[in-house]
Image 1: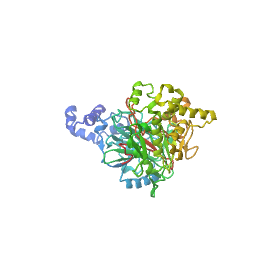
Image 2: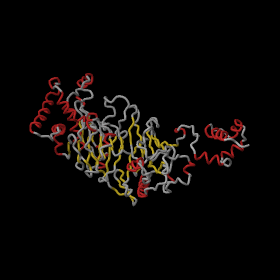
Image 3: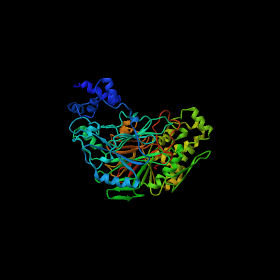
Image 4: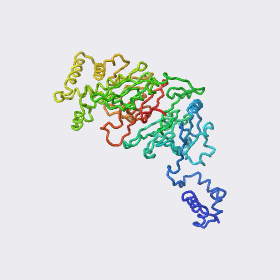
Length: 557
């Protein structure tokens, strides 16, 4: 008896969707078990199967991704992506092999199936990948893992996703795909976004990996844009004995495949020890010294926090494995050095907050800013120039001088008048470069005058490397384009790579890197869900960058 197409489709549905045995299919359909088995093994109705494989058809997987998820052994992993019909960057692969051996790490590659002969993506169905027209470079075939996997607690590898390499925003549509867990998406861009969660939950991130294959795109608009943003790179993940995981980007030089990771430089020929000379700069997450996180202060930039009844003080720590003394950057950039807690714009009109500060004897602007200057002095190092970027919380001092009435603020009247007089004298003398915040810091802690420290003014540029192709570090991130509010998306339009702060939420988007915060993750005025994290930007000597996120005071495993 010749079966109809409708009957054949029913057999497929019963077998793969309903997961029925051939015996049960026989009972339901009346078709013999042997006929069912021969059909499902593709020994009969070959013309049907050829047509079936060429056309879209009903899905056969009804299990949600978490039920199909595998679990990776606890360890260290390098995740990257590969495009079909594209050659591997052998320099990067060979450099990675030295990295993998040193770290005792495993390489995992996710695929992006891209049809250069048409306008759509190919699927990840195994039958498609077995098509002789679709191939992957044999150098990486053993590393391919196109399935979802649990990498660590709250971290997923989303290898099942087949995302177009021309997609402008790889995260679009996937913000809640992983629920409360962070996710790694195989894609040729290098993007990162910190997503909002309840403040009691761990920070949640989405990452893309970069690619191990060379760019290979249709030379039309979508392909040409994708080629511009194509990054030879990977994401390294390590898990420590406490189960905390740490991820950072590995970005290769496109000409050689060489790359930095912290203190070391990896090449196809081996590993070079660049301790103390690998890092050009670190952009710290916004400091907010009056509300600094103690563990971050100690383990990021080597500063000990001493809580005293009237005023917190700070001292230098060395040789505790902190980021600053380990990586020894030429420059360190400080954003929102002050929180300006006592007269902060977030709560200056809140009478309950003002009374709380009064009741705690924490109502002195002088003491509050002395904490900041003392903290700055403790983090200064001879090997690094400290650059204080003008930021909205620091500018709050100037705003206070312009708007407050000292007669109604007895605890701060004398300090207000001292600072106001300094500002007026600068105006009178025509000193247009006068920086009220910088002058206040060096006045309150005179030792800062002997440090390698620079205070930037409004719109003052500080560019790493080349003037035209370098990285601009003079923006805080609060001021946008043409007077608008600043966002990372807005800074992608200015035509040069940028490192910013301000939002307290780590982000990488099209050449813009945004740091997180070094202060407390709950400062009292940030209500509701939060995307804040203790994240810092590392810029290497070759201009490549990564973001390091701290957990429980640790910055790496």
